[in-house]
Length: 316
Image (cartoon, rainbow, N blue to C red; front, side, top):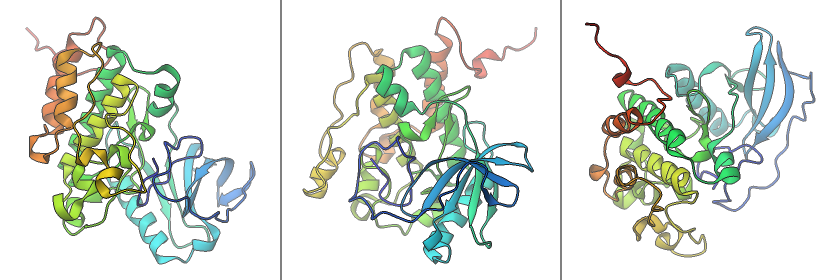
């Protein structure tokens, strides 16, 4: 589902429309080789949303492929769009973690305001689930551990991602968490009373912040739990809601327990996923606590696909 506020999924990766589709927007129409900005050449359009277009581009300064997120032509003087781009830029360039997408540059005061983001090779988790169904433990457990490391780091930095979901996870070595477009600091979230996120992966307090807020890093743990449930089961933890009904009808996570996981999921893994999906934020494990459990599970795999603290043995 498309994020309610701010997020811009790429074309071909949308998980269902959360809101009425926005009217068609103007675009830059860059062709291969066109200059988006000095020394930044378009390769191809990746997609876009209501306010921005996203291009794969070649950066002649970095001498590398990058992703350029550029404000649509009609909105280059729109204060809301520029503030959103500036906020995303600040986070993308401040945050430095192996599992979080990096930002390289931001140009906000030229004719084509844009961000320059890291280009990541690899499929989105959402695409892999659609093609192969559920992940096996050798894929699922390292993925969970890597997401825990990213969310723990964000929590330490006082940032809440607010949109952890399969289409925002690029599978690789390691996996990467992308799209900081609706991320907020804890200070900012103290006064937020509107819904924010993607319907199927929103914690209860994101669905009804006036009654259940404020949103904290526990919301990201819930989103991770929903993502790992989807990856383990090949389906989402809750049935699809109805946009035409009440808030509880739109967001089943406000009134229902998660559906059972398949019996093929190991009980210890299932228990951890369901703990992340606890209705009350205080009942969810912190990302670091979930990581400790996942490290032990990863350490028990026949082949250890990721480095963890259990692989670092003291010298004798």
